[in-house]
Length: 304
Image 1: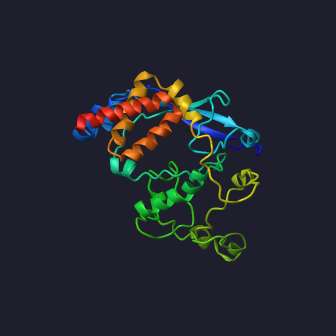
Image 2 (image 1 turned 60 degrees about the horizontal axis):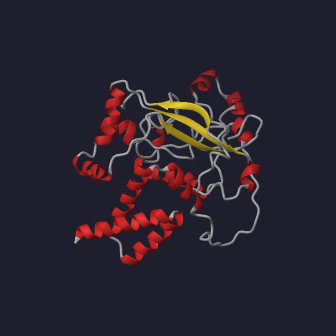
Image 3 (image 1 turned 120 degrees about the horizontal axis):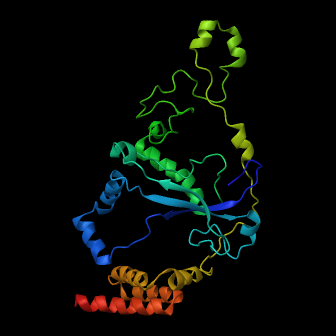
């Protein structure tokens, strides 16, 4: 995030459910997947229709560039979380779903979220996964919805016509931006209109949009240093955060569900794969590895 003074901080966004969290037993979830696959979406639709609007509290964590550089692990590693003791959650706002779509296809199936669709004041971090998604998401939308997917009402700015230099192509349904030029920069204003009579001036669409000086001036550089080379990340700390999650975040019922879910998949793997996986989970917690071994053996016995 960048303020109007050009000062930047790295930020993590969290949406915390206002409804709380309640999990289905594994067996029930498996049953519903086959017998009632619309279970969750129907529950959401009916809650909104009844006026029981679901909401999520938006909270952020803030890390300065200096803190990011000195932190004890790579803060842009998507397999890691930021400690809430070091970087407390700060309440920002609330998102509430207060109406259902009028047309599911138009408003849901054709929606095209992309992390490159950023508003002024928010820029991309050096997160390597994010850097790849900045272009791959929009490429996916062009393939799925067509080159003009940003013309769709669900994807364009709220009550604002899209103004850019994209023209023609499948699914063009608006005025195709009229006679405005489709290249930048262009000369269709200023000196050009000195030679036009009033009628031409009034009927001619002037040049397309200009880049926003406000947003361009806010763009924040960040330093890059070090050597570029292949390196093995296998010796990084990949277990301590998972240990904290197992020991302090999960309650006993959640641990049992986690063991049941993992063992349900591992039981069908080759024996040496099972041993390798259990060894990894045992590095998180010896108890975790022990419970997985017992659960897998129990499932094997049930199959005999």
